[in-house]
Image (cartoon, rainbow, N blue to C red; front, side, top):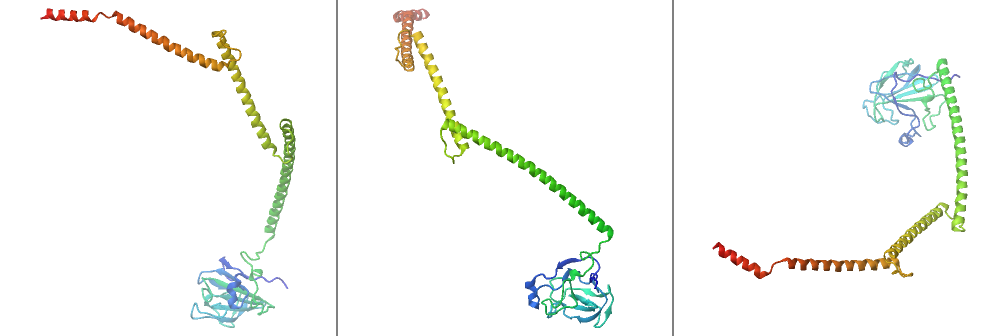
Length: 325
């Protein structure tokens, strides 16, 4: 028996809104283990077409567009075919009467929003013989296995097949090239990692030798870099201290030489040159103060001696007033 293929129940390509088997928690109220068909979002009034030649064996049309019904289909048409049945539910209009025959692609009604529906759509179901109405799906099976059209079992001609084969071959070649490039890159990375590991091990050995030479025995768990940093800091401080000590000694020698030059014979052998220089500076400061005081006293005496006597000055002023009168 050839594989069954039927057309889509409409023209165009409306959006698929719910697939077969979805939302079992919703459909258990109808005694189902899940959604037993396929839903497409179709505007109210969209022509609904027969997927194959058939006969109307069941029709339900309700005056109340949102009337309740046991299966939730609302207004629906069920067609009988040589291979089984097809169902078209939630219709707004039905164009057939029971026992009417219809050809594939002919209009059987208009889509709507009746029954258990949250918005305008078409519910389409298929029963493919032999089927069992007590299987939890009421005998319905997944229509996607049998539909032929956009998104469903589309036929592929030889040209398309050849194009797909070329694309597949190109993709496989690209994948092989990418794998080879990745392998080459990985090999290069492994070599660099090995080289860096070797250099790191050599550096660790040299650092260990250096620490043992200058710091003695080191515990096996010691962090070599931290120990090296401490050693470097210690050596730097020792170097700075030695340099400062050398500068202080040089300065002390220069002060000693200066004192011996200007104070020959006055610097004892065991004297502190800095203390001696400090005492000398204080002595010179005191002597300078005394010299300046003596100089100021002499200048004051000279100035006083140059002034005329006070009595002579007063007599001169008296004679001057007499002449003016």
